[in-house]
Length: 280
Image (tube, rainbow, N blue to C red; front, side):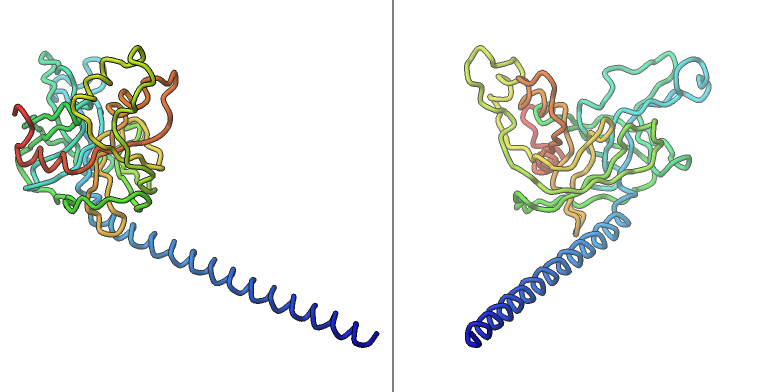
């Protein structure tokens, strides 16, 4: 009987030891996760300090003498970011206005700065890449800090990213907002249709010039179009946030488009800057 009691005690002691060991490693793992998260947050905060001044709002502005003549003096259409020589801006082509009101002296501008201190800079369209929904703008005057493009083209699924832009634009004021996440998938812009009858004109057009896009697990909002998608540690841009072009191609069969966010790879920005767009 005594032997049985001793055996049970030893078993209980063994179980307790294993339990303590398991708890120790779980606590260590949780602590490592917390430390990793803290490091990532610190990296992103430092990165934001460097790049916030490079993110601009895209919009239009009436001539001062026409302020108050009906409708807002300024219209917000999307987000962009400064590249190249500090006087160049990349954005989505679809955020550019189809027309300007000449009667009110309306011009295409970018807004640099935050809140009430944001100032408009008149820009002109230098080049457009409709296939990849990108546009290159240019302005004169002071040079703004330009973002670095990640031309290594080594983006991987699971890679941490963030994007900064102006969700909802004038509704929330011109204060840049940042969202973070990962590259959740790298996939073709066009999803093959089950039957030819379900192909749309947009899909057929995209199939003639297929390319991969980045699917993100961070949520974007109207106004985020054109935002730079960048590495959280270095701030190097890996893509340009885009929902309109991609959703029309990948999600054309859905009655209600998903809340998934997408980005156009930065390689097409580099081509645009180097004037390598076909037919340009």
